[in-house]
Image (cartoon, rainbow, N blue to C red; front, top):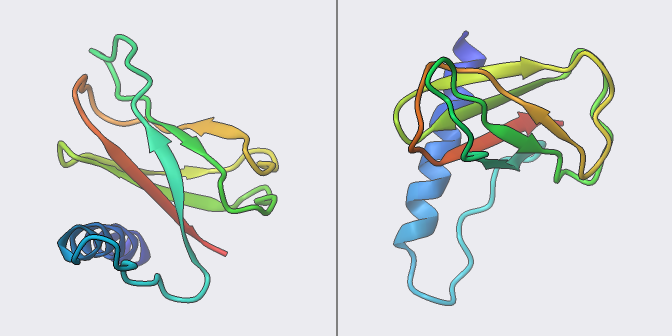
Length: 110
């Protein structure tokens, strides 16, 4: 639980700091081993549960049992524990509370 909170906090800090820098300057670098993954709202009907799609953009295969954390702009968050290896550029679906209009971010530790 503590690691999940720290991961969500770190992602949000990186997003805020990256948005505050002057144009053309590189944003802050994440801590070693921390990777921000692609996360998107599939735009489908999500009245029962939010289903963010998380893409493995780490360049590495993530093993069975690996945990990916995600958070959304409407305050929801969750974790996905891999039931099978996740190859680079492959996707997995998260599950959260109902919500239609949101953006999301996902991250993991390698």
